[in-house]
Image (cartoon, rainbow, N blue to C red; front, side):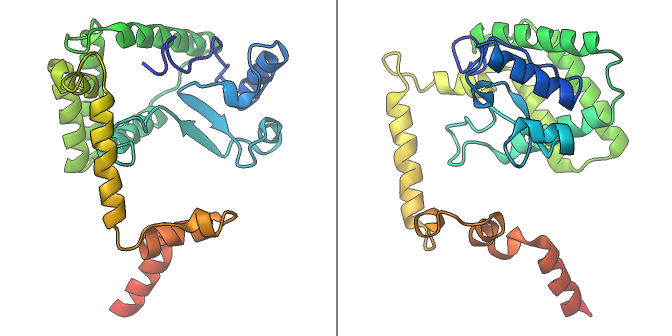
Length: 246
């Protein structure tokens, strides 16, 4: 819903055929007045530079892809479930190991088709099976075959089983689950209940994170260490483990 015309959608479609084309299409839309800045493009995928400047990508390439719209799950304190992250790992691995589309027209055509399908799904009754059930089933079957080929672990198979269940029974989707909590056409009571639950948990944490209050200019490495400790530095943890073993 958030990426539909009722959400934070922008009436533009960047050119994803190359980093240069992406940068040029965003800048053209800014100059044409369709975007105030790069940040106003709210697409589900954005190509990013670590510096935050579009032009830097023309010289140094892209540093990462920003996959958006994932952290919107109110049923978990951090907004995104581990199973969701694993599902996107499956998708990214699948697409990286699949032959790319042959032409720019095919790429842009698929993007246009995807945006149109998303709009339809966003407007569907979440309690009813999507009209794209066949397409969803075909794609899940492709992922299952791909998974069997690379022999991924059971935790990833469980994710696909969950997605299969959602395709077959839409009442198991996050949207349908939220519908069960609607009172007087509102989710306010549910939102407050979950917010209070997460707040209680946060207050019960014996080591609450206050890093930004005390150190607003904290580096990425310092932030990782404060949030995760040893687990945030697996390379050093591994070296200590190997020394201990020897």
